[in-house]
Amino acid sequence: MGPIAIDAERCRRDGLCAAVCPLKLIQYSDPETVPLPVAGAGEVCIRCGHCLAVCPHGAITLDGTAPEQCPPVRHDWALDPERTEHFLRSRRTIREYRQETVDRETILRLIRIARHAPSGHNAQRARWRVIYEPAQVRRMAGLVVDWMRDVSRREPRMSRTLYMGLITAAWEAGMDVICWDAPHVILTHAPEDDPMAVRDCTIALTYLDLAAPGFGLGTCWAGFFGQAASQWPPMREALALPAGHITTGAMMLGRPRYRYARLPPRKEPDISWQ
Image (tube, rainbow, N blue to C red):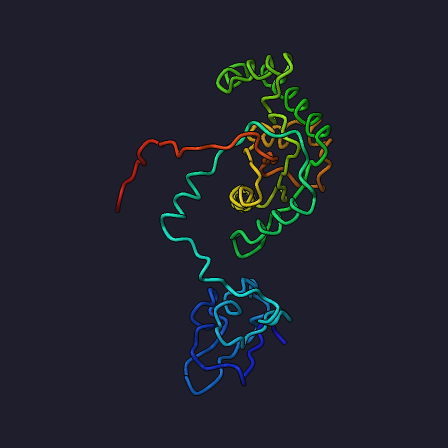
């Protein structure tokens, strides 16, 4: 049997499952007959769940997952355009955190939400590493500073462009402008030879970034951390990722120290139409 099973008694022959399947793996041409998976569907099906999700009658089981096992979509919870704009514009990059840890269950829940991010062929490439202990975050930030010192020696022009001298000077003065004293850092990693990994992991981290405020948490994209983690051998050794994997992105996480009261402007978008 393939991954797609259609219950003939529940099916209303509306063809929705066939219409939404991105690979057209469900045959439907006669409203009098039950749609059927094509031969060999199991070999190419990407398990995206479109067929299972779209059927209003609960007639489709996918890889043994029955409709009753899937939460229903709450259309009454959908954001209208105004609330959507407000939600996205009110998201802030957080660089001031309360010095308290976030419980592991909340972080796990965020990652579980982020796994629903779209990915090429539904491959769900992102693998996750949580730098949970604040002391370990601090240690990793120090390795990032070591990487910056090395870059400053080898590539002074790039160092100046990225203000690495100022950042290392701040570190030496006791100020962490690498991880901003965030209690946690979450990073994604994936096989180095996968050309789609960085894009897919960035989308997954973005999902986590947007989910965090709903839990009273704040985030900041840890660009220097992620770059050092992919380039600096001492940091790669400290992270001990699986063989052949590289860091594809990193994000600070914690409870914001301050609340914001305004939606500041941005420059007008540069748009062309074709």
